[in-house]
Image 1 (tube, rainbow, N blue to C red):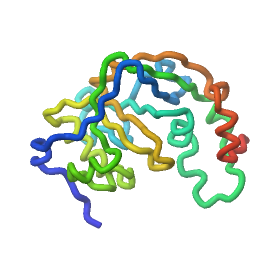
Image 2 (cartoon, rainbow, N blue to C red):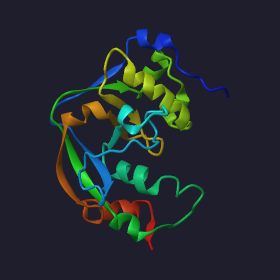
Image 3 (tube, rainbow, N blue to C red):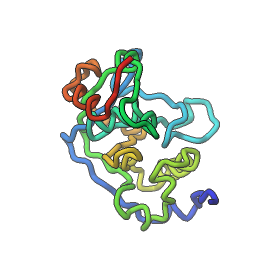
Length: 202
């Protein structure tokens, strides 16, 4: 299947925008080495800046999830369950090395909506929505970021369980504020999630 790259015409379309109100809360798993829950890097990720520039000239992306569960499967479990029947082993150090933060929206957000049928209306390839081609998703993320609508980021379904995820562009991270931040292992509901996915810590 050919890679369907964005064209200059995309800058002229009307985007499907999902508003996120002040007070809404999301979650984020982050490493102990980076204690600020709102810190983010500029390394290659699903919707990161694809340009080969010095980091100062590239945009960054902060990822959030609608629940502890989607944060866990996106950050820790990922594809480790693929093809496995019964228990899946995860190194306990993976959990020991991470915190779970609750993040609150303190200024309204306007996010490009990649849920539902919006992507079809906007001509965005399904591979971008599903995350099956990260290089392609990065190329599209660049035109999302540079669109005249000046969106704050993207709302999209998790490729693993269809729950809601957010990708917030670095310019809009100041519209967020961290609330609770605690050890991932002690986060309320973590034990139930490990049981639900039959995760054995080794």
